[in-house]
Image (cartoon, one colour):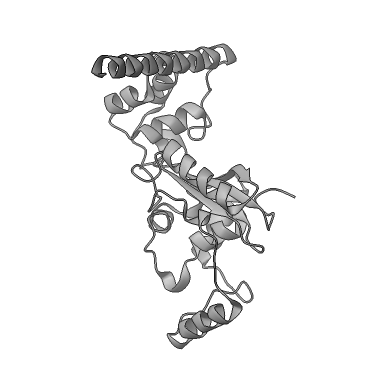
Length: 244
């Protein structure tokens, strides 16, 4: 069974928009929760309340233009909370993504009795708000068409053929080649896009139809990243020593 459909595990998942390159980091930890089920909730919010950044983006770009993948797992809710914060920071998903907070709320164990949960449920039902049920759910003709096209591999135009793309094929190829020796931050600034867009295309999460870096080029890129971090750490220690 795929991790996307597994229930009762502490999982961290990443949603990436193929059009904007912006990320969303989420977690699942309930006994009956799965990443696939959580994704369906994002696509079908209660009462059409598209208040969440990700839900608004899904409505704007269409759910077929997003990828969902499990990126890590934890042994308990506390560790899951730490990992949620870590990945939101790593992908810059709060400032340049669809996360509405810096995460970590799962580190606080839920302390609600069954009676308390029942009262909350009754209060919501009294206000006319009921949890969505999979039974009897129907899809619009537009949604059915998108799903059919997705299965046929024709979900939407790719690359610069997509009218909302900010980069051309030539630019993406150039960015991938230059990322071996230059930082994603500098490239993003030069090409006028978010750093997360460059991160995604360099990693191959977007523009998948174009060739990626060779193994040697990727090894060189990683070595350069490590070297830059070492230099930055050395400069930071030097500055601290001078300040002291």
